[in-house]
Image (cartoon, rainbow, N blue to C red; front, top):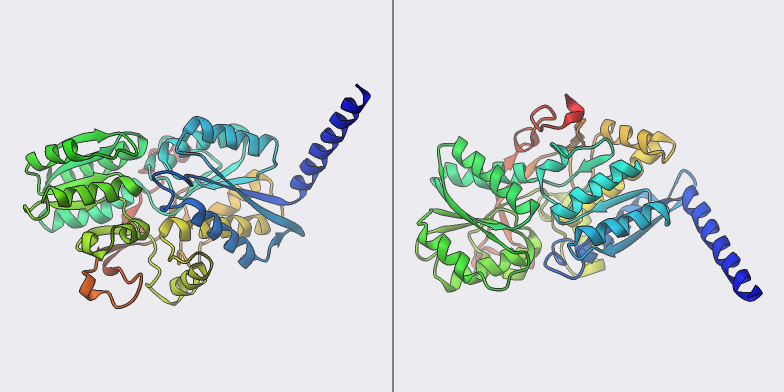
Length: 398
């Protein structure tokens, strides 16, 4: 009995020591999908990007070590919330970032507000995060559904794609992307002919594709992401949808999915990203270092995670403390200038505003080297891509 009590006391001391250490240092958590439909979209590669940011910052802040940990939320909000709560309450995590999957991001956004901790969403899309669901310690970094609608949706409508049918992921992200894009289509004089909701991680899209095909819409909007998008595109080819004259719009498509598809299948797709590795010297410098570590080029989620992590550390340094209120205020004051964004600014609702880019996927004959996948069609200015704080519907800005 005494042995067991002694062991319990030692264990308790261990927890206290660990808690004391984490109270001094800064601890960052990367919470995302590392084994499912979004594993390439962000996954362990985002964890690697965050570690690069810590190394580039120097490995410590305010005289203490910076730690980065990660976990796989498996796209389950309840699991993600349990992990985040343990991180905040027991493991001394100060900030959680990446947060792929909108339903997960909304849940963690709410928990972070309750526990007065900072989260910086990179991988999730819903514009609600800085809209009706905004909160004082929550930030949204790389893109959102409104920006994708303005970029890809706006370009296709202006090019004559004025009738749409949506194939929509059946959760918060899909609904937001369909709504934001549909609203913009109608605003520009187009029509939405219908939509179908598809469970996450579906393997057979045939019945949904047949509905889209029979709608005769000029544009089939894929309001999904990751493997769901690549599988939609592959199966659409089997149905001859593009050959039949309809166009597919990958409303959330990144370099990772284009790489998975290959140029033969992906050529001609129009998409919007906030980052492309071969755009300029800064993006190439970061991408080449990332490639040496991972064997792949980063997409906007991985580059955005690097940026979010780096900016958080800059804010801690500028605040002279890791106190949540002080750091949140600094995040809203400091400009964002790094390998991801130039001249970025954070609005009072937590939305980081920066330019995005409209790309077309190259034909195989146009690609001159590995990962040479995009040709840039246009710059989408940040103040056009994102809602203003006033337009967002965020209660904090009223």
